[in-house]
Image (cartoon, rainbow, N blue to C red; front, side, top):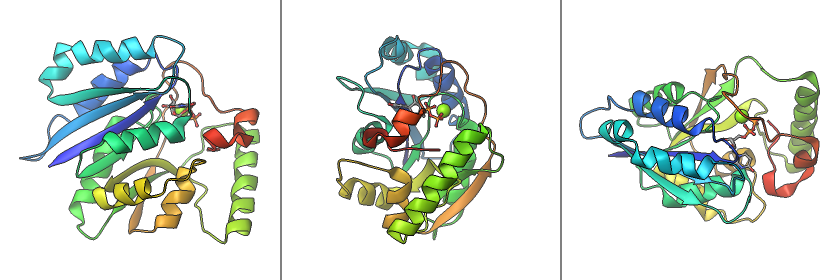
Length: 228
Ligand code: UDP
Ligand code: MG
């Protein structure tokens, strides 16, 4: 049985090594017969993110931890949604984990979410949501307006606090890949495809290094249609 960690990165040079070490530690002691792969997706970074990923490939301590690392490289920046799609396409796991590389979503929490999923055969997905919002008032306001408009216009219940930090079985991965729309919005897609999903509260960490890509122009840009 295999777990696939899918980790998109755009200009995360300072975070790639700590993220890989943390993932290797969190997913080292797996149940008998389980293995774990880490799929980095470099989303056209302009800094040293890609070479940091290649350094992880050569890192003996990561190799010893039995975390199988691979790198998907984009020719330019396509946005996080495209990076997640490419990672899912490469994922061979029975269970997939979507996780940011900036350490805001700790791999140790992802491991707990995997355990929650494995403990209940009826569950398809575990979705992390933020118990405490660690972001500015303006961004909270924009987010709340966005979700109210989305709910009113689509008739769908997209939880404002649920994130794309998720752990799910292969049936969910296949359904996500079956939705081939060009302009993707993962949180909406998760609501659309259904499946039995358990919310999992977590407190995001501060970004380890670098800066968020969230900005007003990006809020209205369809290629990275992600407001939380
Ligand atoms: N990311 C990406 N492509 C982009 C923008 C972001 O792959 O064009 C990645 C980024 O490296 C991080 C995750 O998506 O791993 C979340 O991005 P960010 O931290 O900037 O967003 P925030 O956490 O502030 O919502
Ligand atoms: Mg972040």
